[in-house]
Amino acid sequence: MNRQEILSRIKENPEVSVLIVGGGINGIGVFRELALNGVDVLLVERGDFCSGASAASSHMAHGGIRYLENGEFRLVREAVRERNLLIQNAPHLVKPLPTTIPMFKRFSGLLNAPLKFLKMLDKPSERGSLVIKLGLMMYDAYTDAQGGNRIVPRHKFHSRKKSLANWKLLNPEVLNTAVYYDGAILQPERLAVEILLDAENENPNARALNYMSMIGGSENTIILRDELTDENYDVHPKLVVNAAGPWIDFTNRKLGLSTRFIGGTKGSHIVVKHDELREAIGENEFFFENKDGRIVLIFPLYDKVLIGTSDIAVENPDEVRCTEEEVEYFLEMVKRVFPTIKLTPSNIVFQFSGVRPLPHSGAKTTGQISRDHSIEVVSGDWTNLSFPIYSLVGGKWTSFRAFSEQVTDKTLAFLGMKRQKDTRSLPIGGGRGYPRTADELKRQIESLSAWTALPKDRVQILFERYGTRAESIATFMSGGTDQVLRSLPDYTRREIIFLVQHEKIHHLDDLILRRSMLAMLGRLTLDSIHELAGVLSNALGWGDEQISAEVARTLSILADRHGVRL
Ligand SMILES: Cc1cc2nc3c(=O)[nH]c(=O)nc-3n(C[C@H](O)[C@H](O)[C@H](O)COP(=O)(O)OP(=O)(O)OC[C@H]3O[C@@H](n4cnc5c(N)ncnc54)[C@H](O)[C@@H]3O)c2cc1C
Image (cartoon, rainbow, N blue to C red; front, side):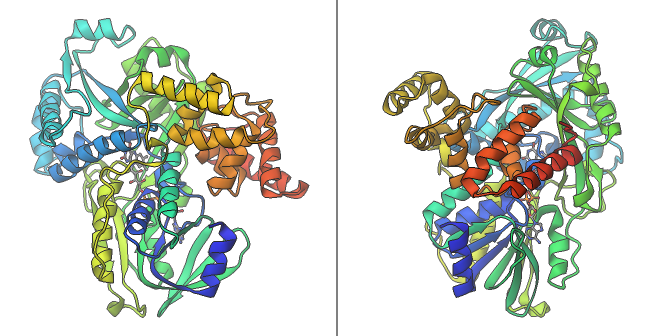
């Protein structure tokens, strides 16, 4: 169903069982679960899908070893399981990630850990190797306890000598390294959209709209505003799921509720182009505690390196940006691990910042705030609203499915419905039928290339980007006259047109920031922005004025939020 059809249906019949406000990964996860279980559900997102906290993550599918120390064993067990499920269900976009912890201290953390666990220590400080060893043994045990195939290998400890032999540019002051496995979510924004499209395909009564804000409501009505046309729509839900992440309290306020569920913390990242650093880390993420106890990472993102992150309490999620101090901190942190590598701000090709929707808490440091998730219920009886509101507080990208499952069970019980399907082993988007071996992948590429008459290397690129959705995209590309983009020869016009027609793209920035990695990997030029705008203008019927407005909007977002000046 296209946007116009969805809007006409809302006008004809404003009744809906569940309205989800917020199209980040948690809203989208609940949307998929409800769709699968036959619920008529409408999801509204005021911007593009996956453009809030879900677009600011460190790209890790992880159990979070660190949370063991806060005593969050349930969360770690759940997240390790969900990490494994993501690697299995979305193998095109979530890959096993060898993760290396360089250690510069042997004992100190041992003293800190129990104190932290007992909540007696205010300031974090660097963990020692013994504590890390214990943590990794527990982490492995969680993976083992889940039975079946081992999705990722167990951890290994390396001596100083072996560590320096493995990583030639590593700081010689290192005492040990430990290598364990987590998952890399290579393109979180694409993954989220694929989950959403799966849900819509499953159930014609599951409808999702980006650029649609929830602006108010009373009694049995919620008012939505179409951000593309400024038109308002009324809907009458039986239940509202507030999945607005760091904006949950702002959203509740629009309904006259003064909640204080969220105490968000800001985190920033930079993406750098630095071939020596990229080579130095290989396919490993370096993940460790910096001198001041903050958890930081150096992460291989395609041919670039992702570096982060900070953890700073903030009030207004709309205002967060990566600051010069944060950049300085990241560059210093890299120097500590790879002292001979010269990294400067000129190597930065992209930066981003977002707010973790953590629960409001009295923790003394941001690191101590729980990363677990909960459903806060405001019943219709306490308000002038005829429906209850479930606010989804906290949670991680990794564990979105488990959280969504819990929200859905509660919602189904409220609606008096029974669960019919679950998502545990449900493949996601281009992960469906994805080849499990390199040979099988080669065969699929060859046969698709033969079938569509597209060159093998082009089909291979499509598989890397879209998994098995490459089949529909390649078929569409070969179904008409196509043209390689002059400024981005690994893309063609028809590939972009396919994305516009099937993936709810309304603005140029949807394409460059979220349906592709073009912005994040620093691949844009003024020329490519104009060329892409030209392709979109054909697909979306833009006139000259709109093309100029879209280019201006994109350049302004890139400069303001991502430090990219073209
Ligand atoms: C710096 C950082 C690093 C992280 N790293 C990781 C990691 O490596 N691994 C991991 O598992 N997790 C990580 N996380 C956590 C994870 O990204 C978040 O917990 C998760 O994305 C939250 O998703 P959400 O859907 O609840 O919120 P969001 O993604 O913020 O979605 C909420 C949406 O609601 C929309 N909205 C707000 N108000 C309205 C309204 N009135 N009407 C309509 N829509 C509205 C917003 O536009 C937004 O898109 C990280 C988070 C941050 C910030």
